Structure formats: C-alpha cells, structure tokens
Length: 636
Figure 1 (cartoon, rainbow, N blue to C red):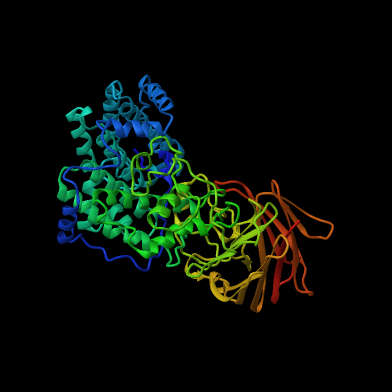
Figure 2: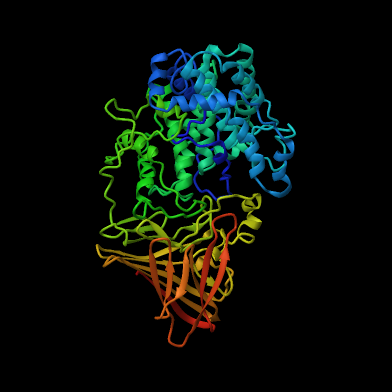
C-alpha cells in the first residue's frame, strides 16, 4: 500500500526532485553506531509491525470498512479479478533513455502496480479468500520487474540491465506497498510467495541501502545526504518496509536507526524559520512522508522514539498554514503546480501531535480509499473526532508572514474577500531545492485567483529539465526570463547560491509593508551593472495596491527591462495603463519611467511543459546610465 496521508497514485511519485543543490549543513555521513541500534532494538515489538493489523482482527477491519465505500472498492477489485495484468513492456521503459519522455514508461509501471491496492483491501474487507490467487499472481508479476526504479531515474539503464539495484522514490514506495500487503494478509499468502517477495525486497531495497553505508556510493548515498524531499520519501518507504516484514529484530532496529539519524538532513533542508524552498506541492510530498516516517517509528517504539522531538518541526509544519497568501491560494514558487494547496491531513496530524493550537483541524479527511495510517488508529486520533474535516473556525491569518531566513514575505489585507489583494514577495537565491532562477519574483492574488506573478513549475517533466546545462537555457519557465523579474542587458539571472537577494530594508505597519532587496548579485555576467535593487510597497487601503520599483545603475549605460507574467488576457486601456483580466478579477498596472525615457512592451508566450502563460517585458527604449521602472498594481 502506498501510505500517503492523502493517497498518492504511483504516477505522482514520478517527480524527479533530486536536483543539484549546494548544501551547507548535512549531518556527517557515517554508519550507525551499534550501541544505538541495540537501544532501539529494546524499544521494538518482537514481531514486524505495519499500520493497522492483519486481516485476523475483524473488529478493526470492520471499523475501517465503515469509514469508506467498501462496496465500491470491492467492485473495483472484482474488475481487476476478471482482467489480465497489463504486460511489462521493455520498449516503453526505454523511451526515456532515448528522448527524455517520461509518460509512457511511467504509465506502464503504474498500471501494473496499481492493481495490488484494490485486491488486498478487498480481501481484507471481505475475508473470503476469493482474491488470494489473483493477489499471489500479481505479487509474482510485480517483483519480477526488470527494474524497480523509474525510467527517469535509470538514465544509464544500470537497473534495467541488472548491473546494479538502486533505491529511489518508486522503489522505496513500492517496497512499502509490498510490506504493508504482506502484513495485512499474514498467513493467507502461500509461504513460497511470501518468501519470494521478501527475498526480492532484500535484493532490490534493503541490501542496496545497507551497502551504501559501507561504500559511500550510489543513489542511496545521495538521498541519505539530501536535504530535499527524496530524503524523507525514501527513508519513509524503506523504513516502513523493513518494519513490516523483517523478522530479525536487530535488523529492523538498524533501519530505524538509519532513519532516525539521516532524517535530520530533511529537517536541515528547511530554513530555520520553517520555509520550504521546494514549494507547497513538495511540502505535501516530502513533509507528508516525514509525517509517515515519524508515525511508523512512533508506533513501533510505543512512543519512545519521536522524530517530532525538535522545535524546528513545528515551524516546518506551520509553513503549510503561513505560506498561504489569501483565500486558500499559495504562491507557485519553484516547481510547484499553480493551484496547489496544503494537504489538510498533514495539518490535522501536526495540529494534534505538535499542539499547534489551530482551530478547524480536529479530524482527518478521508480522501483516499486505501489510507492505512488514517483508517486505522494512529497517534493523532481522538475518540470524539468524527472522520470529517471541519471547515469551521479556521485560523485567522495575520496580515503578514515574513520568512526572514528565506527572504520571503507574504502580505495580506485587513479583510479577505473577493476583491482583496494579497501578495507573496520572494528574495531567496538561485540554488534552492527545485530551483528556478527567480530572485525577486512575486505572486499577486485577488480574491482566490492568481492574476499576476510566478508561473510555477511544469505539469509534465522532460529529462532535459534536470540537466543543469539545459534547464535554464532550453526552458524559459526555469530561467529568470520566464519570471516577473528584471532582464538586464539582454541577460537573465545566473544559477548559484551567490545569486541572491540581500534584504536592505523591511518596514512593516498595519497599513503598509515595504521590502527592499539588492539583487545585483543575480546578474554577475553583466559586468557594467553597478546597482540593481527591487522595492516592494504593499498598501492595505481599499482593495490593496502593490508598487514594484526596480532601480538600476551602470558604469556607462545599459539596457533595462522589467517583466510581468500571467495566464489571463491583457490590453492597454484609455489611460495607457495595462489591464490584466483573469476569470473573475482584474488589475490595472500603471507604468512609470524617468522623464527622459520611453518604453516598449515586448510580448512572449511561454509553455515549457506547463500551462501557457504570457510574459510582458517593460523595456526602456534607450540605454541609460541609471534610472528606474515602476509598476503600480491596483484592483479594478
């Protein structure tokens, strides 16, 4: 079973998030101390333990059955029962290695793995044995895959040709799926089938992780040291798999110790103010897996080992709340898909376990059919809580959230309604997780609609998008050219941690927020550039306004262009102001340049694997030694 808080289809696990990122503070890489392993061993139960219980506990399974539409789930399993397993197709797997296209190979794998879910749950709900032959047949088919990893994570085809076995997002999650299935079904499965599955898990998952600790090589070594979501996702899957099937208690303790130690890297990947540079989508994915990792270890140690025992985790959890702009809208910074919102079950779980004191998050939301962690008792449950997320008395958002370590400011109106403006203003640097070259980017929301600002990431990845030589040149969506930031002397921003925003001024009040950043370092290739600052001024009067002022200076003279990005329509109105119209809202943008200057509006349409958006370049017609471009946004 894929144990997402909100069930994640296999296809969504294809997010390649192990982007090259300079990290500054990993925990030292080392093998785990045997003393600590023996300490953890004493905390663990004698037998393997996964979420929930085996099919034998009929009372527990009847309770779980009452929380879902079990008739529908059983009917779904009956369809699978009467159909043949889709064939494994080498040619589909190999497409990525030829042209970087992911979808066909990923769907081929997903269509096979996704058959196991309904069969196992239907059997445990019904307990009649009629699904067992198909389950055993399916298990034998699945463990026979030439590769347990995604084509996109097997560029050299080492896994496909059996030269090595690596553990990545899919392999870790698949191992967890297998382990949870074996735990649920217990002695219903033929012993030979069970042994074959566990043996395969050793070869494909457990041994490669243990070997990485000795050799300091390979993909496992990479994600153990990663500060991004791969760390949490892979540790969660591998750890849950080990706890669910390994009879060797000492070996189970070793995997828990590995997770306890190396999950510190995931925590280090957030700035100290709790900011997740990967964006809200990868917060759902990465932190959601960290939550599951915590719960799995917490249950297995009877609460004696708690990964939430770190004050920073509270700030990380609150990111899911405080990163919201207004009315449920989040900025689509980094590779986040526009429209992504926080997974409410993450907030529910953290609210209960971290005592966040949030109103309206008193119970889980049953959104997936096979959610083992939520459908069975867990550490966040209260007996009085109904299985329905309350929408009442949600948190009253403050008028601003300033992630001072990340350099990101969220400004909110005094009253949030259909005509109110809220904004997210980004500093940061160009070596963040899932990095876009976007120092100085912003997002502007009116009501519950993003009208202007950061276009977010693609909805479909291509292999070239993760090659640093092509990511920022071939694809404008990742380049600063595809963001609402300056374009200087025909030059986009550079990649790297040194390309950063330096805060120069923050002046906040109930009526007005001003944020000034120095972004000169983001353009190191423009040697003649002496000064480049961006000033944001957010006014709360009326529906709200936003002023963005870029001030520049050259040693001699240079070309300057600011930009606006959006997905709606635009025109010049009778006042010669820009009007941008979305589905429900509209903003007017006044443009102001020095008296001795004039400007042109340069249009471009950009897609690059995501929703098409428009870029309007506000370009000064003459080279200038110094000057400014001011853009004033107001709701109309």
